[in-house]
Image (tube, rainbow, N blue to C red; front, side, top):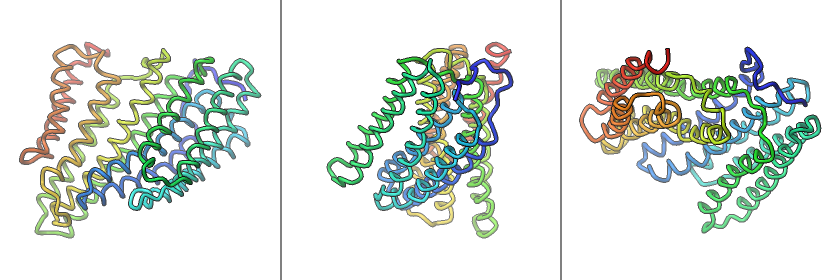
Amino acid sequence: MAPRDPAEPHRTASGLELFFDLVFVVAVSIASGSLHHFEADGEIVSGVGQYLAVFFAIWWAWMNFTWFASAFDTDDWLYRVTTIVQMAGALVVAAGAKPAMEHGDFGLVVIGYVVMRLAMVTQWLRAAAGSPEHRATALRYASGITVVQALWVLWWAADVEALYYVGFVVLAAAELAVPVWAERAGLTPSHPHHITERYGLFTLILLGESILASANAIIDAIDHDEKLAPLVTIAVTGLVLAAGMWWVYFARPQHERLTTMRGTFTFGYVHYVIFAAAGAFSAGIEVAIDHDTHQTDLDAAVAAATTTVPVALFVLGIWFLALRDLLPRWANIAFVALGVGIGASALGPFSLVVAAAAMIAIVVILEVTRTRTHP
């Protein structure tokens, strides 16, 4: 397993990587659907907390595979089989997402997660054997991941309520620390353009969930003639917001952020917020539909916030990660103000319409400044 050339021309996502992503469509969809039910029932805090925990397992496993593939993808039979094992673990995580979020039973999630991560260990051991110059880094990854997986199993088996949230946070932090520790032994040769393409593709998967939610609004509009106008409004504004999120994400190239170790880790870790927000957005659209069809008792402002707050977090996350250094001062101020305004629009009337208008204004800013920052 020799390392790939980080300057390899025309490097694109492989068919195996795209196949791998399909499994995560299922996992994200189930987690988002469970979040929708929590929010519709008024259990906002607990629902968001459980969603973030399950989404962490999904995101972290996907991200580790993506970075490893960028550095060491050999596409031989053993690599493919190991990747399919990881996909099997992801399906177990998907199956366990609902009981984890609704009943606090993380058994299946932990089992599936450990399967994915231990499969990743075998990949790192192959890399250690096949790439002497990266052996120290690969062995650090393998040992670090193995130790943390053992701790996850102990956390689940202990079933101590007092350690439930604290233990999860500590172990999640340990997962995040493993790459930082491992890469200090020598940077793995990831391909910047390949990485940003992979992240862009996962963003499209998440936004696709939101498009589906908007389509559901139209379907519900047909089934609820008395609420035709409000549901069509949700569908239209949902599409505008999703299109705006896509526009913001792909407004400027992001591969230049991956030239340093600090920039690389910032890019990878901030995407947890961006991806989680994109997944929560589709749940918010469904809650908006429930509110207008009287299927939830949520206050109007709270119902709207389940949509507008994730959108605000998404656009502000992209601004922080990829746009703030490329925009003039006035554009940065306006962008942040409009992003905050999207989240705050839930407090006023016609919240989704106001949020959509703010999103259009953000897109206009990006286009007006495009020639100055990115010819």
